[in-house]
Image (cartoon, rainbow, N blue to C red; front, side, top):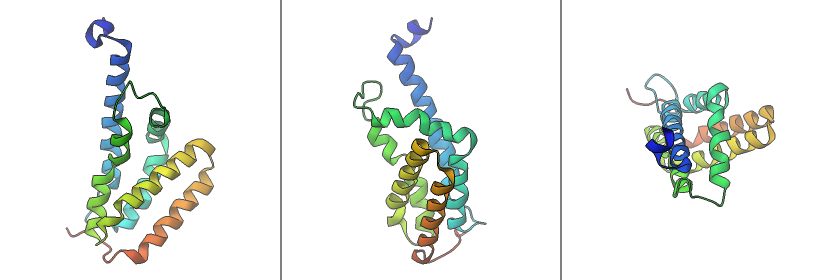
Length: 148
């Protein structure tokens, strides 16, 4: 029955990956969106915890092999999509504090540290690196909260 609906095993796998990707974009996007009652740097700190604890961490385990694999037959263009999928909420949040141009840098640090955590499982070191990075961002932002 499944093969009839999806035609091939790869079709079924692609559909599962697309659904998982949509959920990750929704979940991580919600974590990264600015809130009127919270400093955006606090949002980033909280988002990191949300992205690396519990169920959210499984996304990294699912998508890293697909991103790193040379064979893109399951999802042509995945690398490009997966590289920019959280850029919009980061841009929105950093725009609200006067530094939208930092969105790509913050996204790159998040992705790098998520990969590091997945590879090493050294939670204390990677969490400390994230805290240091957010602390470095502090002096670069001109406003603390998102206009409500």
